[in-house]
Image 1: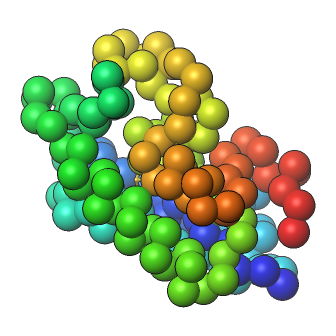
Image 2: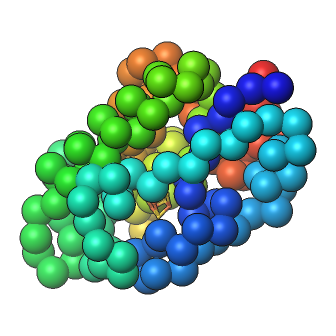
Length: 144
Ligand code: SF4
Protein backbone atom coordinates (compact mmCIF):
# COMPACT_ATOMS: atom_id res chain seq x y z
CA UNK A 1 0.00 0.00 0.00
CA UNK A 2 1.49 3.34 -1.08
CA UNK A 3 0.28 6.91 -1.32
CA UNK A 4 0.39 7.87 -5.00
CA UNK A 5 -0.14 11.41 -6.28
CA UNK A 6 -2.30 11.30 -9.42
CA UNK A 7 -3.45 13.91 -11.94
CA UNK A 8 -7.07 14.45 -10.96
CA UNK A 9 -8.25 14.28 -14.57
CA UNK A 10 -6.99 10.68 -14.81
CA UNK A 11 -9.28 9.77 -11.91
CA UNK A 12 -12.38 11.13 -13.63
CA UNK A 13 -12.47 14.62 -12.17
CA UNK A 14 -13.56 17.15 -14.77
CA UNK A 15 -10.70 19.59 -14.35
CA UNK A 16 -9.18 19.72 -17.83
CA UNK A 17 -9.06 22.97 -19.76
CA UNK A 18 -12.13 21.91 -21.75
CA UNK A 19 -14.02 21.07 -18.56
CA UNK A 20 -13.84 17.32 -19.10
CA UNK A 21 -11.80 14.48 -17.64
CA UNK A 22 -9.63 11.77 -19.16
CA UNK A 23 -10.48 8.94 -16.80
CA UNK A 24 -8.05 6.06 -17.09
CA UNK A 25 -9.29 2.65 -15.98
CA UNK A 26 -5.80 1.19 -15.51
CA UNK A 27 -4.86 4.05 -13.17
CA UNK A 28 -8.15 3.74 -11.28
CA UNK A 29 -7.49 0.02 -10.84
CA UNK A 30 -4.50 0.93 -8.64
CA UNK A 31 -6.96 2.25 -6.03
CA UNK A 32 -7.67 -1.36 -5.06
CA UNK A 33 -4.22 -1.63 -3.52
CA UNK A 34 -3.02 1.94 -3.04
CA UNK A 35 -4.25 5.33 -1.88
CA UNK A 36 -4.59 7.62 -4.89
CA UNK A 37 -4.33 11.33 -4.06
CA UNK A 38 -5.82 13.53 -6.80
CA UNK A 39 -4.31 16.89 -7.62
CA UNK A 40 -4.94 19.32 -10.46
CA UNK A 41 -2.05 21.79 -10.40
CA UNK A 42 -3.72 24.16 -12.85
CA UNK A 43 -6.76 24.53 -10.60
CA UNK A 44 -4.53 24.69 -7.51
CA UNK A 45 -2.69 27.54 -9.20
CA UNK A 46 -5.88 29.55 -9.44
CA UNK A 47 -6.93 28.91 -13.02
CA UNK A 48 -10.59 28.52 -13.94
CA UNK A 49 -12.24 25.50 -15.51
CA UNK A 50 -12.85 25.60 -18.42
CA UNK A 51 -9.81 27.71 -19.39
CA UNK A 52 -7.78 28.57 -22.44
CA UNK A 53 -5.24 25.85 -23.31
CA UNK A 54 -1.61 26.63 -22.52
CA UNK A 55 1.78 25.41 -23.66
CA UNK A 56 5.36 26.04 -22.57
CA UNK A 57 7.44 28.25 -24.80
CA UNK A 58 10.86 29.76 -24.08
CA UNK A 59 10.59 28.92 -20.38
CA UNK A 60 7.17 30.54 -19.93
CA UNK A 61 3.68 29.09 -19.93
CA UNK A 62 1.48 30.99 -22.37
CA UNK A 63 -2.17 30.38 -23.13
CA UNK A 64 -3.51 30.50 -26.67
CA UNK A 65 -4.82 34.03 -26.00
CA UNK A 66 -1.25 35.26 -25.54
CA UNK A 67 -1.49 35.59 -21.73
CA UNK A 68 1.45 34.59 -19.54
CA UNK A 69 0.13 32.10 -16.95
CA UNK A 70 3.53 30.96 -15.70
CA UNK A 71 2.85 32.16 -12.16
CA UNK A 72 -0.35 30.10 -11.93
CA UNK A 73 1.57 27.04 -13.06
CA UNK A 74 4.35 27.67 -10.53
CA UNK A 75 1.88 28.16 -7.71
CA UNK A 76 0.03 24.99 -8.67
CA UNK A 77 3.26 23.03 -8.80
CA UNK A 78 4.22 24.22 -5.30
CA UNK A 79 0.79 23.17 -4.01
CA UNK A 80 1.06 19.74 -5.64
CA UNK A 81 4.50 19.29 -4.09
CA UNK A 82 3.19 20.30 -0.68
CA UNK A 83 0.32 17.82 -0.90
CA UNK A 84 2.78 15.11 -1.96
CA UNK A 85 5.17 15.84 0.89
CA UNK A 86 2.39 16.00 3.49
CA UNK A 87 1.35 12.53 2.42
CA UNK A 88 4.78 10.93 2.16
CA UNK A 89 4.38 10.45 -1.58
CA UNK A 90 7.31 8.90 -3.46
CA UNK A 91 5.53 8.15 -6.74
CA UNK A 92 3.28 10.25 -8.97
CA UNK A 93 1.24 9.30 -12.02
CA UNK A 94 0.67 12.42 -14.09
CA UNK A 95 -1.15 13.07 -17.35
CA UNK A 96 1.13 12.76 -20.35
CA UNK A 97 2.11 15.81 -22.43
CA UNK A 98 0.38 18.45 -20.24
CA UNK A 99 2.27 21.72 -19.60
CA UNK A 100 1.74 21.01 -15.87
CA UNK A 101 1.74 17.26 -15.59
CA UNK A 102 3.60 15.98 -18.67
CA UNK A 103 6.75 13.96 -18.10
CA UNK A 104 9.44 13.46 -20.71
CA UNK A 105 7.38 14.85 -23.59
CA UNK A 106 5.30 18.03 -23.82
CA UNK A 107 3.65 20.14 -26.50
CA UNK A 108 6.12 22.49 -28.13
CA UNK A 109 4.41 25.84 -27.59
CA UNK A 110 3.09 26.22 -31.12
CA UNK A 111 -0.44 24.90 -30.38
CA UNK A 112 -0.03 22.70 -33.44
CA UNK A 113 -0.01 19.34 -31.66
CA UNK A 114 3.77 18.97 -32.10
CA UNK A 115 5.70 17.62 -29.13
CA UNK A 116 9.22 18.04 -27.82
CA UNK A 117 11.23 16.41 -25.02
CA UNK A 118 10.58 18.10 -21.68
CA UNK A 119 8.60 18.11 -18.46
CA UNK A 120 5.57 20.07 -17.36
CA UNK A 121 6.06 22.58 -14.54
CA UNK A 122 4.65 20.33 -11.80
CA UNK A 123 6.31 17.16 -13.06
CA UNK A 124 9.67 18.93 -13.09
CA UNK A 125 9.26 20.25 -9.53
CA UNK A 126 8.22 16.86 -8.17
CA UNK A 127 11.23 15.23 -9.85
CA UNK A 128 13.53 17.87 -8.33
CA UNK A 129 12.26 16.71 -4.93
CA UNK A 130 12.96 13.02 -5.61
CA UNK A 131 9.41 11.99 -6.42
CA UNK A 132 9.34 9.49 -9.29
CA UNK A 133 6.96 10.65 -12.00
CA UNK A 134 5.25 8.31 -14.46
CA UNK A 135 2.67 9.01 -17.11
CA UNK A 136 -0.52 6.97 -17.41
CA UNK A 137 1.19 5.10 -20.26
CA UNK A 138 4.03 3.94 -18.00
CA UNK A 139 2.17 2.42 -15.08
CA UNK A 140 3.58 -1.04 -15.79
CA UNK A 141 7.05 0.41 -15.08
CA UNK A 142 6.14 1.71 -11.61
CA UNK A 143 8.25 0.43 -8.77
CA UNK A 144 6.43 0.67 -5.42
FE1 SF4 B 1 -5.10 17.07 -15.57
FE2 SF4 B 1 -2.78 18.03 -14.70
FE3 SF4 B 1 -4.15 19.35 -16.55
FE4 SF4 B 1 -5.10 19.27 -14.08
S1 SF4 B 1 -3.19 20.21 -14.71
S2 SF4 B 1 -6.25 18.92 -15.94
S3 SF4 B 1 -4.48 17.25 -13.44
S4 SF4 B 1 -3.24 17.32 -16.79
